[in-house]
Image (cartoon, rainbow, N blue to C red; front, side):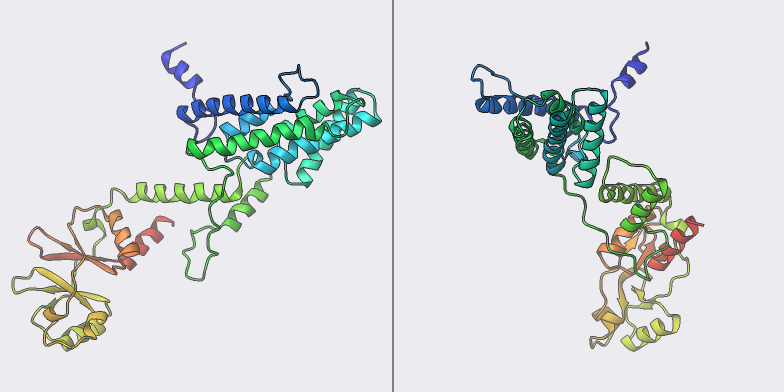
Length: 348
C-alpha cells in the first residue's frame, strides 16, 4: 500500500471533520462514558456492581462527542430516544417471549415511536433490544434507571465538554433567512427552496435544513468569489467618465447629474486629478463652489481586483468607484449597476 493510500485510508469520512475534531471526540467520549458509569454506579441496587451502564450509551457517545451538530445527537433525541426505545422493549418483553419476532417488533416499534416523537436516535434501536433482553423480570422503571440516568449524565457531560471544545452543544442552526422580495435577484435561494429540494429528492440526510442552507450560502459566496477573482477593474469599468471641475458651481454640478442621469461625479482639480466626489446629497448644502461641499471619492487602480469593490457597495454605501491611473486621473468608473450586469450575464 502506497503512502498516499495509507493517508487517504485514515481520512475522516464526515464532512467538515478534522484530525483535531476526532481526537477531541475521543477524549470527550472517554470523559463522558467514564463519568456516566461512575455516577450511575451509586444508584445500583447491588453495591458490589461498579459498572452500571447500558451498551447503547457507547453509540450515543459517538454522536454526542463526534457529531454534535447532528439533529440525532441533540439532548431530546439522546435522552428521549434511549428511554422511549428501552420502554418499548420492556413492554414487549412482558407480553411476548424472547424470539426473532419480539426483537423485530422492539426495534421497529422504537423507530416508529422515536420518529413520531421527534427524537430519532440510532442507539435507540439498541436500547430497545436491551429492554427486551432485560426480560419480563425487569421493572418498568428500567427505562429510567439505568437507561434514562445514563443518558442524562452523558448529555450533561457533552454539554459541559463542548463548552471547551469549540463546538456549540446543543447545536443552534443559523437564523432563518429573510424571504425573497420582489427585488431579490433570481438566483438567490431561501430556506423554503432547500426544504422543497429535500422533499423532491426523497432522501433523508443527517443534517438540518437550516444548516444545509448555511452551507449552500457559503458555497455560493466562495464560488462567486472564485469566478470573478481574476476580473480586474479595467475589465469591468466604463471608460467614459462624466466629471465636474472643483471650481464649478453647485448648480452646474446638479445640472450635469440630472442631464447625464448619474448618481455621483468625480471632482477634478485644474490638473485633471480626482480630488473628491459629489452627488445630490452634497448639493443640498449651500456653497459657492463644488470644492467646498465635495466628499472623498472612492477610487481604485485599473489592475485592482474588481471583486473587492463589492464590500464598498454593501458596507460603505458607495454607489460608484472611480478608476484612476498612477497620476490620479480618471480612466473609468464602475457602478453597482455594472456589477449587477456582470453577475446576470454570468448566470445565462
